[in-house]
Amino acid sequence: MQALDSQVAVRAAVLAALRDTDHPLINVVGPLGVGKTRALAGLDLGAARVVDDVDDAAAVGRLADRLRDHQAGDRWIAVSRRPVSAWPRWQDLAPPVTVRLDPWRAGAIESLAREAGLRQPAELRAVASLSGGLPLIAVQLAHSLLSGVPADARGALAAPAAREVLRRLAREGAEAVDGALSALATLGSADEEMLTRLTSLGPAEFDLLGELSVVRRDELGLVLREPYRTLLDLGARWRRPLARQSLLAGGVQHRMRQAAARRDRREQVAIVGPSLALVDDPVIRETLFPAAEPRVRIRPAEPGDEADIVRLTRLWARRGHLDAKACGRMLETWWACQPTGFYLAVDADGEAVGLSNVLPLRESATPALELLLQQHTDTLRADPDGTAGVLVGLAVSGDEDPAVHAAILRHTLAIGMMSQRVLVSTPWLPYQRLCEQLGMSHQGDTRHDVYRCGRMNRIYLQDFAVEQLPSWLGRLGAGGQGAGFDWERHVRQALGDLHRPGRLAASPLSALPVTGSGAALAALLRAAVEILGGSGAGEDVEAARALTWRYLQGGIGEPVRLGRSRATYFRRLRHGVRRVTEIVQALAGEAGQR
Image (tube, rainbow, N blue to C red; front, side, top):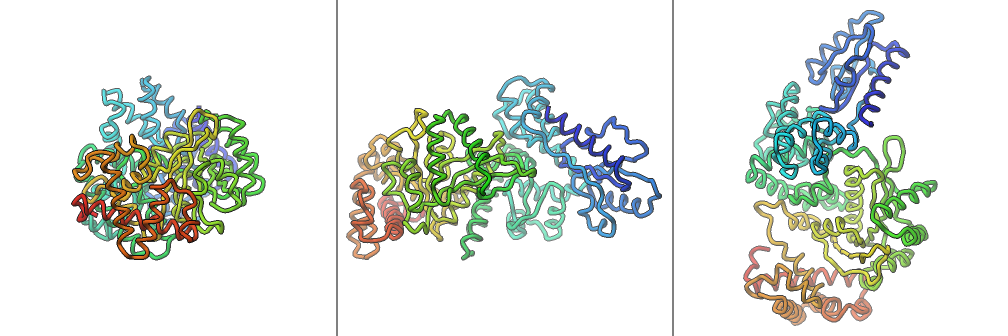
């Protein structure tokens, strides 16, 4: 059992440090609730003295004073949530011997839940997914389930565990910033301006918040670590749903303004990517921001990684019930591309635990594009010089760790934002759902079953022009005030479905008073393209021609007919969709909502 292995490893490390070094202090470090005290219970430590709960400045100061005045042969074992040497009071002392205790794996948490009396698979999954590998939280969740809380009532399930986290944080001074801590949980990350505007937090309180062991700092401000963020946010959604929605909407607006003020694309991506945590959609939140901290870094594949790539690709095939030979051919095709598009997620020991393929849309990638896009290849590929666009074809984590998988997906999405255009070709339903929730446009399905799995690949497209990143985040919204109807997304989707009456009838635009049916919506869209073509503006006329060839006439050889490069063609398409959206809104009497 991994939990026992982890505890045995910590106990062995402590005993080895006592035996092999004469350093006066051993620091056992691990996050709140990971079981540090439990790991040391019953251990024969000889004359060494255990000092527990070294988690605030006063406790660290007392320990530092002991170390300054210690006698030869004195030994201490300090138990803390973060290294004691990170505190200012430790600057003039030598760093201790540090022994770390990491969160448990999902299997060990499920075993702990069974020991508590749970048996239903849904209950075991709920404990594993929300505990973040922390046994204290797992036990709290198990108690809630045993008391009769349903496994799918995530807010009611998380609230007691959130209260216990806040209670244990009290000795760090968290009581003074409880409200701001809960707000930070909902916002995911926040700078001082955001928290001051949305919660009236003062500068001193912001500094205090940043000193808590469950909070870290990054480029966007303060970030509440997992699983504490998820627990506190679920508790807020259950207890104060309307206040939480207002907070989310304010957070989206703040990040939109912040991103719009940046001119550097990399800075915009760094703001918009993490801000997807503000989108109050369970698919996005649970897939991209699960209740666990990833302990991996993601890097491009290098020479020597071939065995890991083969191993993880075979795992991906088995897990997705894909034909092994078809996946082998796809792997060979990816390998023939330059660059190959492979990225590896690597853990602290250097082991490859995850894999993705994010292929730049270059001429050298043509064989892979033709396999994954098939009849859509000529329509969707980017310029031959590779100035924009990537195709996502694979993402897998070795042990199904949701935190690792989420890190891979966030990295993949960031590459797509940087490249200004991302295509996804996948037969897997969870990825299709994620693409749709992210507002990506369904371009159609492949003609043939790529992986011989009984399912065609669905193809999705999202353009990320420089000016579109902030507005894309705004269209996805926060589910509260200011999160409006995504007109442009629905117009783009309806244009793509013009020749699919069933799908067109299911469009939200078909329910508008001005349409009322799929056939009427098709007529409205054709009229809007005609209006655009008659506007007299050169860019509008070219955009109408691009829309006509792409959506109204089947999209055969569009850039050639337009007499423009592919990049110009896609810019005209984006412009045309925006202008048609404006026309549809005007005809629907909704222009003021855009």
